[in-house]
Image 1: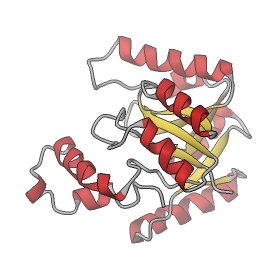
Image 2 (image 1 turned 120 degrees about the vertical axis):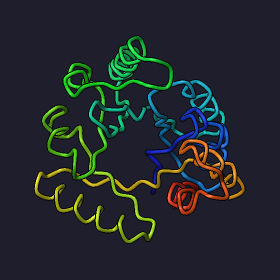
Image 3 (image 1 turned 90 degrees about the vertical axis):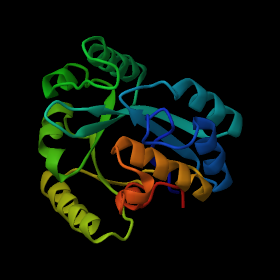
Length: 214
């Protein structure tokens, strides 16, 4: 049975348009037994998410998308208590030296805090993350939303995963729980890119190509 292991909430500032409770409620409605909340550079929504999942009888997985120095993000899933502590320490290190809304971590810092964590990768980061986390702690993530460019990226990721013997993981990457929240996501996307909604072109569509549960 499918479990969504890469969801965002409104705690991913301007990149999510629903509360953690909305995600849990929608997952329960769709009979999805487990969901992972991976907000950007923070665990702010984790307590509310965990409590809502417990009440709904769902399994809650915790993690974060950690911004990497030099560009890109590394989605990290907590596997153990030690992993949760490591993720907290990694994010705290980033926040203490950065202005609000900014910050990144180096690959060396990720390696220092890799214990108890699982990394989700695409083709571009697969080899480096496998070297950091080791075999069995890295999954190649694919999302299929019937977009041409995405299909090419997915095939590249699949080929790389086969070459490196990394298991595949399918996610949907929801940033909102219900179709009605798409309009909010469009506004957030325009704000994030510093453009007016009526001149944003395809930016909202690309940002929301698959960002609800289905």
